[in-house]
Image (cartoon, rainbow, N blue to C red; front, side, top):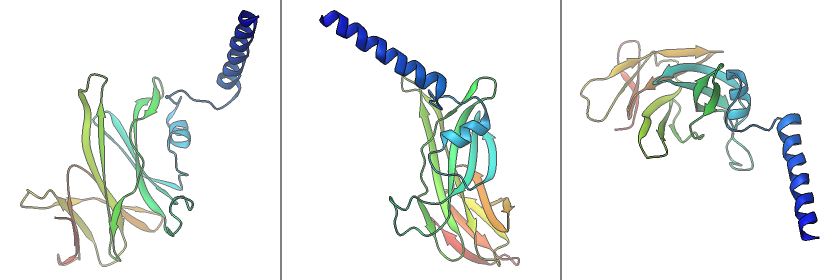
Length: 192
């Protein structure tokens, strides 16, 4: 009798698993194409894709989202965030990063700094880099520059315009970000 119950339970679980795999949107780690990876691999509702860039065989996606009101009831803003994907439409896409938007902000600009650290099963480093990005809110800021705490000079960062909002995006370990006026005056400096 126990054998019959065990076999029946195994058969039932097999049918349920087969149903989930064949007839639902159930995914096991990889997505067939990049659009599916964005739609299903990012846990937040994506409002807009602002920028994508490939670095070290990782596709970095900068997007906007609204914070979950249940998790952050006082968050009344649209956040910028990053997703990190590895793969291709031929091999499949995999989300390899975390999702968050810890940032510094004021009326002039926001600064987000997100790391990607990925290791294989033996603990060997596959990827380790940072992305600094954010919004430029003050119309008097015409240039954004970044540097590490150790560096003496700043490097200019491209400003990306998307639907009337200006953003910046830089791959590196930059902790110091500043916004400058047309004449080169520092309007805002964050970090370091």
